[in-house]
Length: 395
Image 1 (tube, rainbow, N blue to C red):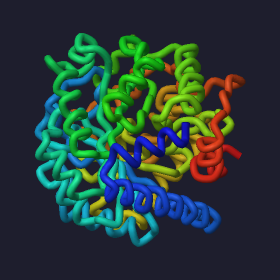
Image 2: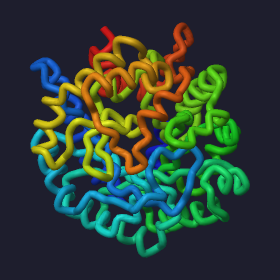
Image 3: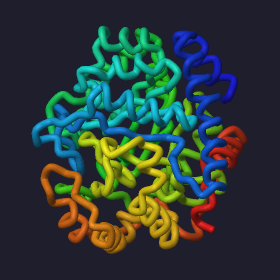
């Protein structure tokens, strides 16, 4: 599998892009985690990976979306992004996840990426705006991988995304990426209407389309229209986890997850301190689905802000002390208590985030005690053991 995957990467992608990925994401990404470990020993907390929602606007209307896509679109400016990324780079960071809304609606997205050739950017996108021209721009910049969301069949996609002809437009974006030899990923928010995508035939189809990695994450019913009936059962979550572990040793495609360590124990990236989120309005939040903040990127440097935030620190510690899973899903009451205790502001335009939390009922997340599914493939096991684990949060 490793040889087959390496062959795909060498033959299907632009060598310059592969070099950028190997060094900016691989070598420097490992270094950023090692620096994070050293900071932890000094009692400092600054995530090795930042996730930034650069714009709130989007052309789709997805079920369960927590972003204010129907409100006036807001975005982080190029100069603000350069300040933020520049400060993070001073502390060893090189990888940034770019979210929205729809990031490709940001008119300066490629310029921002080009401003930082020593970094690597993963753009979470619906793919519909990736034309040949945009794909050529991504290839020229060289340090960006699009992670394109597919939510099911044509019928399911239209229902999940709130628009017509969604799948065909998204597939056209993937094809543009393939033609331009980009390192391309596909993400799926696994829910009741698309759980059939957790299958070997689907992965084989993606491989034939030139997709190099996939990211399966379980649907999280949050926001103003949570659509709780789409949430997976605990049995389906375990099935998804087992499937990922099995396929990692079988097919030449990388399978990403952010919610389990090498032993198959659940973890929360926010609770471990490995990542926090910045909203389209510049608010510094614990994670994308926790839309409350005390600080902004406009207060001071991002390192000082995150390292000194009592709000973020309390969120990490409280979450880790109560669950290895998602504190929002399992203990919305604790989220409400934390927000109230710190007087955190609602960072949405709709202004109903606290009411939404109060209306939630506890449910299962990725943490299912006694049901750990350890990594089977040596490469994933090694990588997770050294660079993606609990970082002492759960001891």
